[in-house]
Length: 441
Image 1 (cartoon, rainbow, N blue to C red):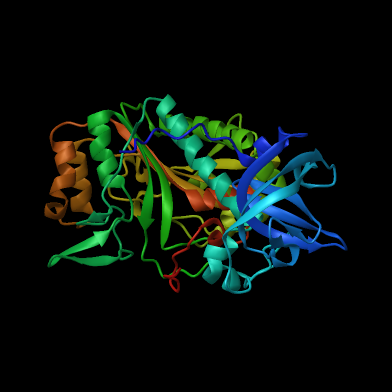
Image 2: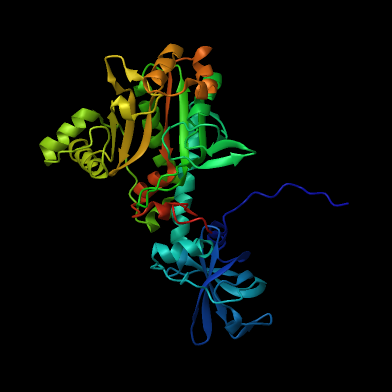
């Protein structure tokens, strides 16, 4: 009988090779590109987090001909590491042995070996299982993964419990018609357009909760900033004094996340020429004041009395950068009529909601605020909006049996990634984007 022991400590292959100058190493990877010279070839291997240059000298090593080594071939190689300033990471491996672990059966459909593939989205997205092998594509999603990891780390440091809420629900948290309907064993159901209800339930139980999970919006948008499925970074916190507690938590979280990304993705950020913002504090402006500034400073008069248009988000971020040297700006006190029914209204002016958006480099990445926690207040708002309270009995149960003041927010991970890295289209920040026209791969 065989016994299985735990795996050994992982060591990044690039690091292991770089630390082995003058010694022999063995590692596995995929041929990224081959450049043939007169009597040798450069074989650049793609490993977990980078490229390693190898040299294949002579015509044959261990029965494998130099001419047989092709792009996308999977190899185990052995060789001596030597310094080479012109190579990736300043080293190269002089091969002495190799074996073939896997081989392609067709020519690659895209030029993976080039620094820039130069593909349009229409070409890139259908071939994502292949194009995601490219270092620049991988860099985007390593940064995105670090954003999520940094978010989780900060939330845990602040006493938040990691939760997982259902994505099949009986009603939409945001209302409206942008819901994907399901037949749930004969009962109408929907894909969750937000974890809102459940994270409020759990804030009442745990006090502070966070989630990283899928969100579904059946919106017929075909823009560079919308997806029909995206990843949400959500948190909800109880025992707050105001929505400003939520905003302060987000400010601290973003500051921590940016530091985490800089620490863990320095090479990826350099490859993508991305500038990580320094966050000390984030300016805040009320919705109606923002409208005034845009008209008085930029001559922009908006016809939208309830929300910010995309061009206004750009202008407000321009103002925040010019006036406060900030890439971020909070906009608060939106008109209550266009905010969700669970948003708490401002006691000083019930026409306004204690709700906010966070804009980052010209785009809204966050919506949040303080929620209604009083039972009668929530029932009155449902009635005022002519919503059937019976459909929300499981939600109003939260209020009926006592709930502390609470609030929270949701962040679009893809939008945050897009703005941080300066990408042109949100689909570039989604591994396998789901939009109106795309269900594959």
